[in-house]
Length: 297
Ligand SMILES: Nc1ncnc2c1ncn2[C@@H]1O[C@H](COP(=O)(O)OP(=O)(O)OP(=O)(O)O)[C@@H](O)[C@H]1O
Ligand SMILES: [Mg+2]
Image (cartoon, rainbow, N blue to C red; front, side, top):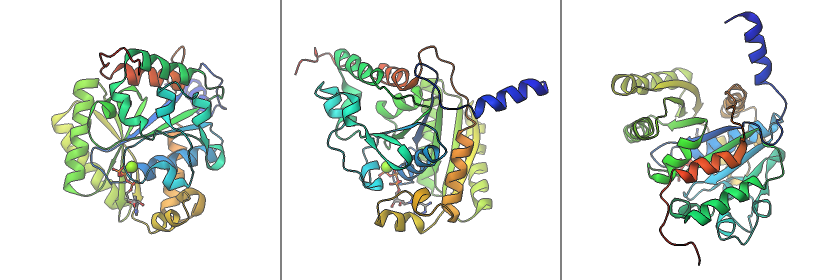
């Protein structure tokens, strides 16, 4: 690639926040197996991106116990449930988090996303299109498993981050997720995040092991997004319901998490004509089965 083209690309990557209607990087954080650190990675990545001045929207689509609101100590009064029911606009349920991060609490609405009527799907897409803020990056904390909901969110995202730990079940479940996304949704590129590792070498070796299995059986391309060490700061930050990158930015894990945001800033921005969270939600719900009810409740 000629030097001028490279410079232009480099400039584009550090471009200031975009206006509404432009492409937005959407990052789905998934794992297959539960409890490997998806929520922690998604929350800290989103806060670190917000700290870098990126207008960031975090969608809590996790059905786990330690949801985004618990991790960040926020008290949502409404969630996607009310948006789906048409009782609230999206602006009413968005909660502000650290560094100006905007959070969409999923709440009980998340489990309904995979079973919406076409009218409800349309209403949800409209709700996202009414967001008046410009968004640069959207991070989605995806639920555990490989159901339609998970595949729908990952399939709609411009980047899928697969979180792994050095445990057999984590590796096999992450492999199952990558395989399904490749075969059923045509996704070829994945970012692999090795969590709870002893050191960088251990993280690299874990990535190489996963890469070897995927290379052997699947037609996918994996990038090592990073390795987050096992660190007590996660437990300490949880006690005060703050993100690690807020409370312990200089810790070993904090530094890596902040570095992930720097790397995420280099992800390509999709060039979609009418981009943003609306386009993402439209793609995600369109991939899920439509219920045969009229949607009148
Ligand atoms: N690198 C780490 N070092 C130490 N503890 C960690 C690390 N990453 C995550 N944890 C801890 O592991 C636990 C599970 O993390 P988290 O809730 O983020 O996982 P999850 O994949 O979102 O789980 P679920 O499937 O319930 O949604 C939490 O107590 C969290 O603080
Ligand atoms: Mg979780």
